[in-house]
Length: 284
Length: 310
Image (cartoon, rainbow over all chains, first blue to last red; front, side, top):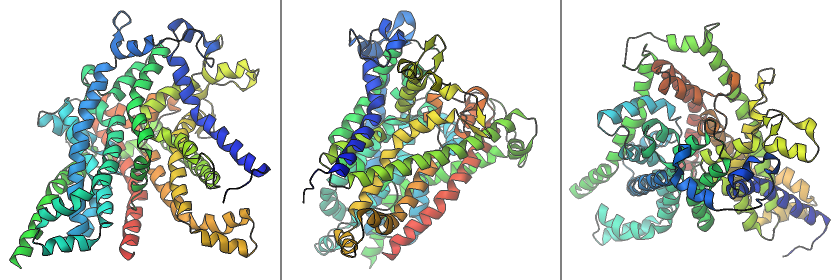
């Protein structure tokens, strides 16, 4: 049922294109400024115009820093983000899968109270646990370390990963579980033989969600990690763009570097990202 | 029978580590923070001397007190930021969803563009929009101001997020921040509405058409009322994000001159970790928690109860 182009259809397309252009303004500014040499980005009357002599130098400078200007490179911080995000994502996904399995197929007494109490943990303002958290991490010798931050992301990731897997497993027919039980499978047998093999789409949604959130997170990272060389890229980027920075070409290149991993995942696996997004509004 | 009981124990043991971790890290830590908020811990070393609600009283009532003044501004800023942020996200989100629901060629591309900011860090958003809205100085104009001058609209130049003008209790410096936040989160409401629109069976629209309703009437009378639960979810999810916002504003503008862009999240962070006023930081965070709980707890109960009925 394709519609013919009439004036109101053209109006709709014009509006959609206009909005798309507005949404892309920051991308334009990022790319244009990120490609300019310092002398050009300093020429503010040309801020909105494309570079005359585009250069990729900013990206390598943003990565490795400029020692004589006292600018730290983001490269090591990007690696910190990788070392942080991968284990935290995997651990919270596995735990979420086990929790989701139990909460959807083995409802124990009290589950209807425990589940909302778990969920509440993903809505709290993290400021309200920040002081005890930093003290506890220091006490168990994880203060100021990436391991401490990994632990924190695993724990506070549990509510959302549990929620997504619980709703995902609820869709898998209980008949399948019953059949495996009749064949003599125990609780772990059912999980590994029936649920886990069917879990791939669930894992993709949860892993993308956790990867994006942990990569992008700032408050925990800035509270736990004070040493600049230990910080993930969000904190390092904020420090680079703060204060009296002049090298905005370098900042914009650094911002693109920081944004690229989650952006690529979104562009390639967008529909799984959207499923995670919608799952966050509680109803599956 | 014994077998079943053993399995029940195994199932509970599987989820127990998560329950213990969350019990400590969420509820234990909240209790601990409440205890700190009732103490006079005001330095590097912990001091749990009981002072009752003194820290809260100071934030709300002590006239002439810098902290009370700042917190008062923060609460107004939060109110206005939340109000306009919700308006932008719900209004434009709904508009974009309805536009995309018109059997659009290239819908996927448009959707991808409207939603991509959701995949970015608030820090990335903050840095980009800080650069876009940086006002510059009269002889060295930056950002949007430079653009306005270039197209001959000099009279529209202003200080953006550095402007200290206030209309009543509303600081105009919040406007650029609301634009940045709206840019990032409008796609979220669009995705929610689009999912809702796709869930409405074509027969319902067909039936309304047969009854002689125009396309506009179908939206106003039939479809929008069916989207009301989605609007509620969007308002609550975005509203609670806005009540605890920190990263975006901290990166983009910080507290601002005269606290024009300050919010409780920034106040809490600075007074705790830069000023060592732990008890005051704890009190602010507990007020933030209460505000969030006020919206989230009824919503959680409502959603899960509805789920049980299904």
